[in-house]
Length: 214
Ligand code: SAM
Image (cartoon, rainbow, N blue to C red; front, side):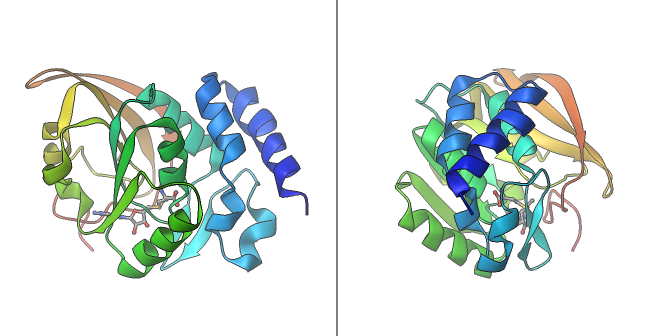
């Protein structure tokens, strides 16, 4: 299988064709080898238009969702980003190409360990993966110029809003356990935000103190 060609086709047919315009995002998706974030048995399906299982009942998100949520952060390259839900590590690797630093939190130890190993084998030395409840954020490294939550939440966790820098954006799927809408919160002042609602989606649960119960 020619993974480079499959990746180029994924970007043009699934992502650019559906309206993602940010050239830096398109280039990052073309650069990061998505198949390396999957088990060998899944690799042939890596560039398909769907999420895939990564073990522990979790998934790597559909490529279009990765691109669209990343574009919504509006990155220029100088930002420190917090990601909640490391999963396979793929989204963190994409963010690492586009931002200065990435802090990613995963609640399942075995996934965090695998993601760390994959990220280490790439040129992605600006990512750190922590194990914990990401609904609490990671205040020691904040504030963040962007925060991305890659699991579905019943509501936006307040600690994440508090750790967002003024001018920064928080991108999060919010809704019921079976369907959500991507919300983009922009922090306009110490305690003020604007909210825009984007694509309908379906993510696995965000589980934690400010998320769903286990
Ligand atoms: N971004 C991932 C990737 O690129 O593979 C996909 C993430 S997967 C859709 C959602 C992940 O969020 C799962 O790995 C899940 O264990 C994790 N998760 C759920 N609740 C969490 C929490 N409170 N803190 C950290 N991670 C959480």
